[in-house]
Length: 407
Image (cartoon, rainbow, N blue to C red; front, side, top):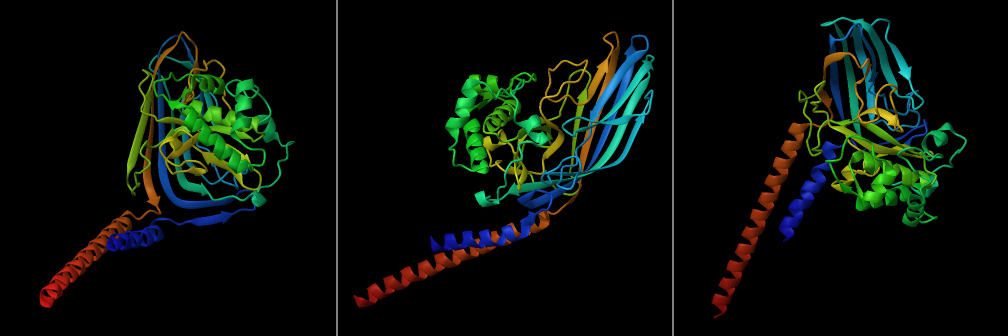
């Protein structure tokens, strides 16, 4: 038994020293108490083509979400942890009637907006972009009450993310509001309140991946005790807002649904969506809540069902939009993943092909080193066990010999 314990301890001490940075960071940008454990840098290529099939003078408006730069010193994402460091390397839009422009909404999401108002049959319009994006595995460490600052409730974030009951975030619903106060204690600090609410949502809801793409909202999720990632997020956000904690939804997609994968340089993932409704995108939603002096903290209550995703985000979550539910003029609100957004004349018919490819170009995870550590640790463990068994066998033989000699 001692031999097995010793082998286990050898592995514990060898393994973490080599696979994580554990870099604790304090920031003057209003974000602190987080660690960047591991990072993966991806080259991301986006290729979109729309071909007009029929209808006189095809008229289209396009709105493409850019992959946000999410870090403390970004002018767009103030107080954000460094979940996604994004650099647009090139962008080419061919076939637009006028110069494409960048649109920024009230949540500081950015979009490429362009149009084509006179496409003839077989005419095309294309968008090609390339990003270099580093996704960081970010964990917010144990936060003491003394480290938490005071809210400035006059800040615009309260009008955007806290004060108002709105569609899909019904904080004034009497049952949701009462439940929020039953979950937490008045003396709990903001992070403890958030954790209790996260845990309650995970326990209250049953995951259902057969729900339609249409947004259902917090009240529906609360009443039906069902949801997918959107309902998990909407309910957690609403319960947090009931406690006066600014909270918002983050939408995008995940690169894989298997978070145990260790990405390697050269590894690739490809996703597509077609005008015929076929899609391989893994659309996803999660949560950020704001704590003064600490910043916006990411949580994924859906993935917390099977892992530990409170105050933690990994390098597989790729962000497109932050904020509340948003609508696109001319499009029905029937999808929580409206990417790409295309507004068109109902008399037009068209085909489009949207492809996104990710390739790992660098990582601070040395897979060879991990394998070597595992092998060495296993060998050491086996040797210790064998030695222990030999010692035990020799002791047994010696004891038998001594008993025989005494007789």
